[in-house]
Amino acid sequence: MLERRRSSPGDDLVSTLIAEEQDGDRLSDVELVNLVLNVLVGGVDTTQSQLAHAVRLFAEHPEQWERVRSDPETFVALAVEEALRYEPITPFTARIMIEDVEYGGVTFPEGTIVLVGTVAANRDGVEDADRFDVAREPTKPLTFGAGIHYCLGANLAKAEMQEALAFLAARVERFELTAEPGFDTVQGVYGMASLPVRLVPG
Image (cartoon, rainbow, N blue to C red):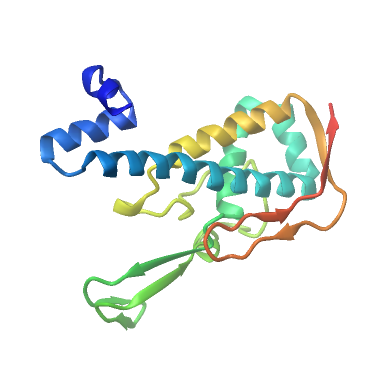
């Protein structure tokens, strides 16, 4: 994989990482392979977990799924953004303060571990924030992090979810929960332990 990209680089992640390796001597071949594998494997686990939450939300809010089905070109991308905001699969993000920071009248000393509640942050400043609404103007949720720690696979995850919802919108009239869903722990990736759902074809 690496040799092929070295001889024929393209407009892709692996080629970009190799260029950085050659120009800046930053990553070894082993590090490159591990990074690419982490992106691919991590993207599968997180995206499928976020998609499961989206399906559950649409089962609980059938009027929102009907809106997506009625105009997928308009609402599929918006639905992905709203699912990411409303039910993030990363409920908490930890950061270590590299210097003293004062915020809201509280001083966080250097070395302090700060645990950010993504669910609360994604609702901060959002009107009627506890309502799941695919017609909502997209916000900038912290589901993928922010700044230099912004998720490398964010755009891929969004694209995969958009493809999945568009596929389902053309084929599924509604989702029906057949039993109470089971939720995974909020530590790490927050997915569904079980999602007993019936897909009614449309």
